[in-house]
Length: 134
Picture 1 (cartoon, rainbow, N blue to C red):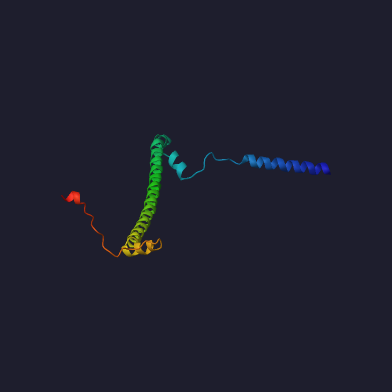
Picture 2 (picture 1 turned 90 degrees about the horizontal axis):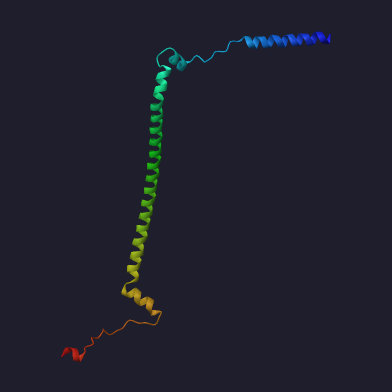
């Protein structure tokens, strides 16, 4: 009995293999592109001749995209630098105003008072050399 089952199993496997082998496999799928290439709207030779032009267009597209990215990076850098220039300009103006305030006579007098230097109460005198006047 066991031999009989084994032979039946082997026969079923052979039948399955035959069924799998009998299926026809198409060479290429039937779609729009293959129909256009086979039936003459666009021939394989025309597509082959057009490949250098297609590659040229692809190269131009990549150059265009790279140029666009470079331009955007330059614009970002210009904006960043203009903000930095404005900030430095504000710092310059505040420092200039502060120095103008600190260089006034009263502010200088207040600062040198701690050193023991006082403002003279008499106006300066002109020194005259007697030999030079003659």
